[in-house]
Length: 250
Image (cartoon, rainbow, N blue to C red; front, side, top):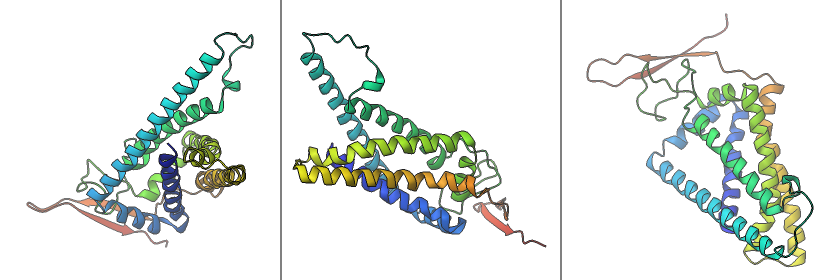
């Protein structure tokens, strides 16, 4: 479980680096997304590998939680606590499971929005070639910059994003040290050191990812209106083409 956890930490760092390109403007993040999607089958393999890591990590977490629950049930089988059970006094492993489930639910929504665009209704914006199949008037595609801004301009989406980052920070603050402990690094010195590193890493990830919706709202960032995209109707035997025209201020 420690290995899968550390691999996911590495993915978070890489993903945050890609996300930060949004601060460099539409061209940079759109170009980054274009190059990423241009990998084609390689990207699909990478995504499947990442999904496998997630599944293994979740499966191991559930198995560990069951083992811990069974162990506690055995330990307290001869004496019943009079204290009412509450989620607020749950063990760290239980909270890790709760935060993990919450993060997983967020990731599903995040993939629906960002990766697959299943909730898109932004028919005025399309990707460059390479993101999906050939664009058609019935199936427009959205610029990555515009998609992200449009999603985060929705208060509920921005709020859920920030809340999810808080859960990720909690998960990382406990899980980072636990990952190394599961690999046999349990010396008191290293445990304290890794605990501090884990806290710094958790805060860095939370603040880094949360800075994007905060930036969108603090600086009133809007979906671009400086370009107009149309899909040229193809002549017989040819593919559709994208035409972009820029509106310059008078």
